[in-house]
Image (cartoon, rainbow, N blue to C red; front, side, top):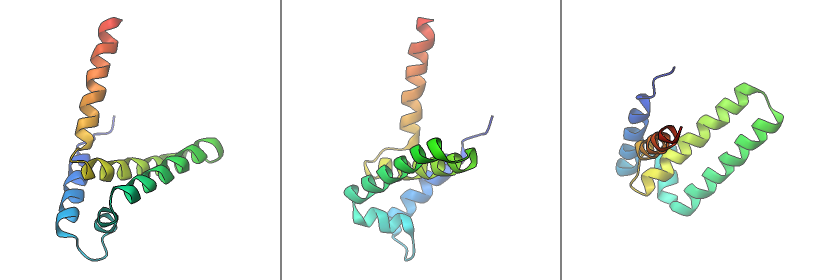
Length: 101
């Protein structure tokens, strides 16, 4: 199984670019445009995942899924959350599901 600790690194990069707003930073540009633009971009990426699932190969689906998760991480940061908050929620749900079985 792939290790996912690198997601913490991506989280830190997102936070840093939001704060420092370097030129030519896609993250800083998206953050500066605000929540509506971030949400729109996340929606576009979600549609691309669906299209890839229905009409493209697995490699394209994986690529589009990575884009979706990346943009979700940006959205979460804009609301002072991280992917770890989502992972914790999934872990809590898993504990409930497994305790019922």
